Length: 440
Image (cartoon, rainbow, N blue to C red):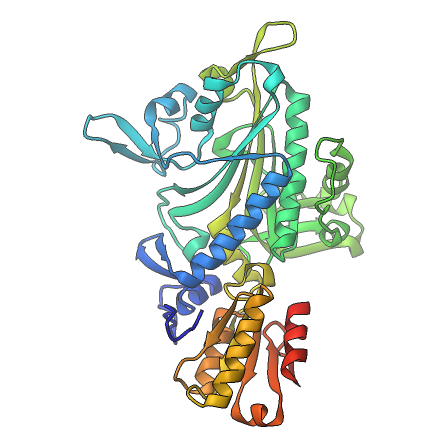
C-alpha cells in the first residue's frame, strides 16, 4: 500500500473529551471516528487491526473444536421472553418494533438465539458435545459510554456457546475454552491472568474473567507471582483429553480483581514475596450456567437411556473491538502506539525520504516489493512530506519497523532500519536490512 493513496487521517491533538490513552491514540492515529456517543466508524488502519485480532480469535476457537456460525444482530423479543430475561435485562437493551409491530431487540448477547438454533436440530446425546461461536456486532445502551472502544455501546464480540449432556461434560468444555483463551492473549502479545468472577446477568455458578496487565487499567488485580509468570499452554494440546490438571495449575494460585479480592486469603495463600498487585483490563469472560437457558427454552436431548434431559450450557466471550484499545493501553509510549507484530496494521514501512529522485525511488520500490514478497505486509511512505513528519506519523500509528531510504544511504549502498518497540536503529546493506526485518 502506498501511503500517498491511502486514507490515514492522523491528528496532531486528541479531542478534549478523550480521557484515556487508547481513546486518544485511536483518534489521533486515525483508527476510528466517533459517529455518536459510544458508536464508532472503523477507519482503514483500525479495521486492519480489528480483522487481525478477529482472525487470531477465530483460529484458536477452531483449534479448540468450536464451530463458527453467524447470528443476526436483531433478535426476536419472544425468545428472550422464553428465557425470562426480556423484562429483567434493563435499559441497556435497545428495544425495537418493526413495521408489523413485532418486538425486536439489538442483541447485547446471544444465549437465546443460539439455544433456539441448537434445539431446532440436535435431539440426541450422540450429537454432543457442540460448541458454536459467533463473531458479531453487539449493542448495549450504556448510560455513560466512555473511554472509546473500551466502553462503547456498539462493539464486536466473539461469543461461543457449549452444549453438553451433563455437568461433567460441560466442565470439560469450559476447560477447553479456559485454555484457548490463554492462547489467544499470548498470540496477541498480552499477559492474561484468569481470575474468578461474578456471573452477573448471564447467570451460572462458575465463571472466570481474563485480565491483561496495563498501568492504565480500570481494575486492581491481586495475584500470585507464579501465575503471572506462567506461560500460555500453547497450541499442542490434546483438546479431547483431560485438561483439568492444566486448568487447576492456573486456578489453585490466588488471583482476584478488586471486586472479588479477599486480603486475608491472599496473605494466607501467597508469601509476601509472591504477592503481586497491578492494574488490569478485562478482555474476556467465560461462564458455565448449566440448565439456566435450556430448561425454560426446551433445549433437550435424548440421553443414553432414551429419556430427554436439558443440555448443560456455557458461554464464552471475548471483546474483539475492546482488545484493540486494551492492547494500546498495555503497549504505547509518548510517541504513539507500539503494536505487537501479529496485529500491526502494516508489518513494516519503507520510508522514501526523497520521492521523485530516481535512485531513491528505485531502492524504495525494490525494498517494498521484497518485503511484500516475504509476507511482511509493508506500506510505502511515498508522501511528499518532511522526513520528520513521516517518522512522527509512523511512530504514532505504531508500524513495527521502518526501513528508511535516503539519497546519502543509497550513494553508500545502505539503508537504515528502526525497530518501533525499542527505538533501536541500524544502518545496513539492503539485503541484510530485509533479513533483519523478516527474521523478527
